[in-house]
Amino acid sequence: MANTKSAKIPKSMEDIHVTLTEMTDNFCAEHLNQEYADLAHAAIAALCRKRPSPLNSGSPRVWACAILVALGQTNFLSDKSSRPCMATADLRGHFGVAESTASNKAKLVRTLLDMHQFHHKWMLPSKLATTSLPWMIQINGLIVDARDLPVEIQEAAVQKGLIPYVHHRSDE
Image (cartoon, rainbow, N blue to C red):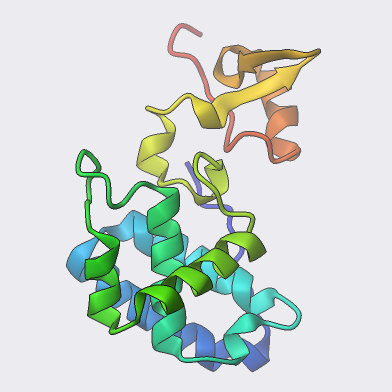
């Protein structure tokens, strides 16, 4: 599946973008994985494009932590059955950010980016194939799994942002 998230950012935000991506990349390489790094890139770029960008004020260390906490909450990072798995306190500890600060900024990140559990835009790609909820859509009042629908309907759902991509059945 190709990553279609835009990385375009305003010139005025380039330095902040570089700083935050370096911080999140280093953390993800050491403690998480490339999927988290890719989602962090998308979140940072999206926050850089906000007018006004919340990233213009506050510590980059706090923002990097908040973005990763928000992504971790969305992807069940602290769930022991999840891989990778990390307690939020350990993540915050790495960045030296207080619990209340990390929680408040992570909530702001989730709100600004409409980030919530099972939203395909902010879900780890490796979990999309094994989780049904991001694929559920409503058609004529019925909830259906979009993966079972004809390709034409899936394509329309992708264009509307309802599902992540067209799922081709193996029996086709």
